[in-house]
Length: 419
Image (cartoon, rainbow, N blue to C red):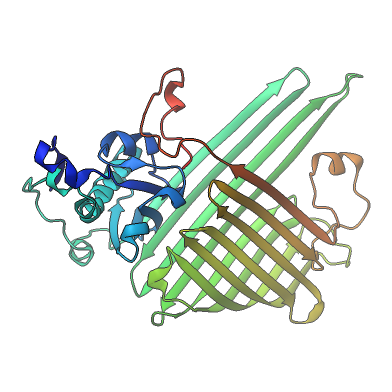
């Protein structure tokens, strides 16, 4: 199906006297290209702020089992259109390019705009045609004929190299994964390896080199137990010179409850997750507790909240964990990020990550060298850690900007626009 707008006849001028539909597009996920939206959907007015719009288009997404992205496009009527809502979906496969995704979103948004344009006096300019495209097979039918039985595999590697006369740095990364996802069951296996090397030359001609590496593997299996419950288990194996760990292993059965149905996860998610695990450690150097290896049981409780609403977004998690054989060895972790529109044109965003640490079993015995402290070659003893950031934004002036002008912006000029 295709949609086109033709010049309206004079008799229809009065019906559309109010002008084009004012739309606020709220899309900060992969595939959002606002210059492309304005170019391909020119029959509406785009506004910078939700308070100036008659229609709020909220786009969210989440990963599919096949490695693609499932988009949910929510149409929220405002002002005269208040109470008139709609929801459409679009799924891009794992092989989709950036252009494929943005074109898929444009087609979906166009289709959803039809009912609202028709209600605001622009329906007389709307032309609908059927291109005769064959219907898309349902996910169930596609899975039935899938020779891979829904398994998706990925392999990736990258390297970063930088340097100058007194400094050289090399970072290498590699990863691989295998995933299989159905409505009833999910399995994910990942492996990764990292290598970092830094070399320094001091003013007296002496040299210092810092090396670190880590590798690991993890496995997750989850069974759906209805719209709110799920159960499964996690397992992981890791090695890290930074954490003084030759090898560690953890296995943990886990249960999770979602206050909202999982089907609403692109808009709201509130989960409580509890896990009991068994850990086995082998260290490179003897620890401050005189251990070279040990086995300990632990427990973890995590509360997570994720919201994507017309007023903004919030992602928060609070985790508490302790070893079951020694409750004094524990930690608490808080993560919070939000981006909220407080009033017209004004928004605030904040990111906070903070941890209270009482479980650093892996710390190597003996004093750390000055080099270890400076280049962070080894994890140092600490009772806390944090990272935080805050930002404010206030935009004012013309509420409408439909013009696309990429001159002097180069190849990176398109797709970056703040509404």
